[in-house]
Length: 179
Image 1: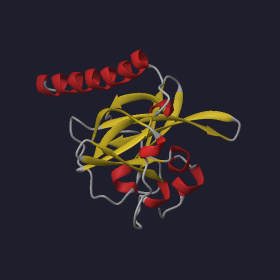
Image 2: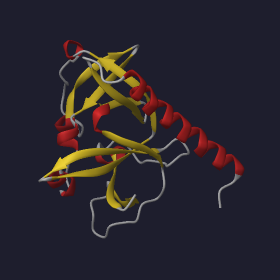
Image 3: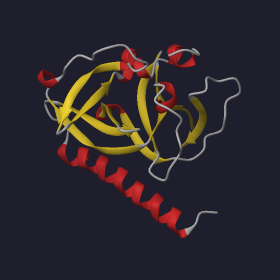
Image 4: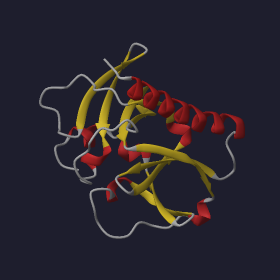
């Protein structure tokens, strides 16, 4: 049973997530790419907003036996079974403590001949960022994130790592035990 503080926190996160998605609906898609930014530890990441189905508060998914450690399980989303991947674990950023700000970003992707959904566990959603492609810088160095990196952009005083959703949601790669 949730306490009043947990309920208020959950409602605040749901309101923030809804506000971010409404901002996109109101502004529409611009000529530059729009990205949903989110936090993993102290790092800022982004995925293309066109791939975002919805943002959900963290709820423990049903575990999948013998799945890689970063596959947290599955959730039922309006009758669809949606796998949930913890990006902190996948990117080897450190152990994740699921806080009230933790959310699951549900992304759409094309698999074989059908559209599928996958959830990504992140620490918190931030904002919608619009950037022109000419402001995209290539990634540097090798890390667990490198295979999924589309590039880097400046967002104020921070650098945001833009993730390649197609690579990130590659089922064969997800089911492998290594990144």
